[in-house]
Image 1 (cartoon, rainbow, N blue to C red):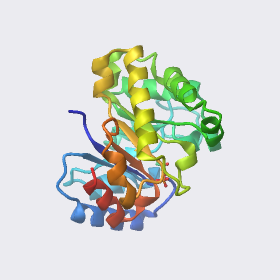
Image 2 (image 1 turned 120 degrees about the vertical axis):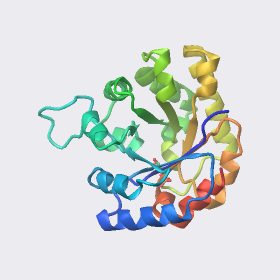
Image 3 (image 1 turned 60 degrees about the horizontal axis):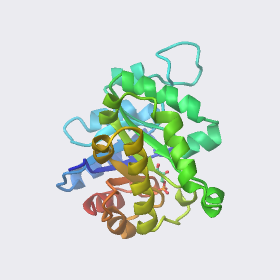
Length: 249
Ligand SMILES: O=C(CO)COP(=O)(O)O
C-alpha cells in the first residue's frame, strides 16, 4: 500500500499572522485520515508554522532550497538551515521555479542530490507545457525531466522521493487534467521509473497530481489507481477547501 499524500503549496502567499490563522483553522478541522498532510508556507514563516503545528500530524515543507550548505549565494536558503529548524521536506522543481527563475534539470539534479544526501524527503515536480501536450510530446518531456534530475540517484534514495506530476497548463488556470489524463500519465511515470530501476521502487513511489485540484474534482482524480494524492496550490489557502480535498482521498 503506497503512502497517500495531500500537500499544500502556498507559493508566495500569507503573512505571518495569516499563516498562524490558517494553520490553527486547519489543525482544528483536520479530518481523521491515513494520508500524510503537508503544508509549504513561504520561508519566512516556516519557523512559525513548525511552532503552530508542534502537536499536529501536519508536516511542514519548504518550497525550494539551494544545493550548497552555505556561502555567497545571496537570497538563498540551504538544506542545513531547513534541517536546523526541523523542516525535512522540500519541494524541488516546481514549474514556476523552472519557468520564472530559470531552474534547469541540471540544477534540479544537484538540489535533489543534496536533499537526499541529507535524508530529506523531496517532492519533485515536473510536467509538460501546453504546446508540448498539443504536439503530443508530453510523454517524452516528462520522461526526460525524470531522467535528467532523478535517474542518477541510487535505488536507496527512492524511499525519500515523492513525484508530483503538474501539467503546466493546469496550474492556476482552473483547467484540470481529466482523471483519465492524470491516470494515463501517472501509469507512464510508474513504468518509466520501473524501467530505470525496478518494479518494487516504481510500485512504492507516491505520485501526486497537481493543477487546479479543488474540492469538486479531487475525489475523481484521487480515485485513479496510480494517483496517490495531490499537490494543491490555490485551494490549499482556504482551510475548508483544503480539508475537503483531504477528505476526498
Ligand atoms: O502549482 C500547483 C501546486 O504546486 C497547483 O496550483 P493550483 O492548484 O493553484 O493550480
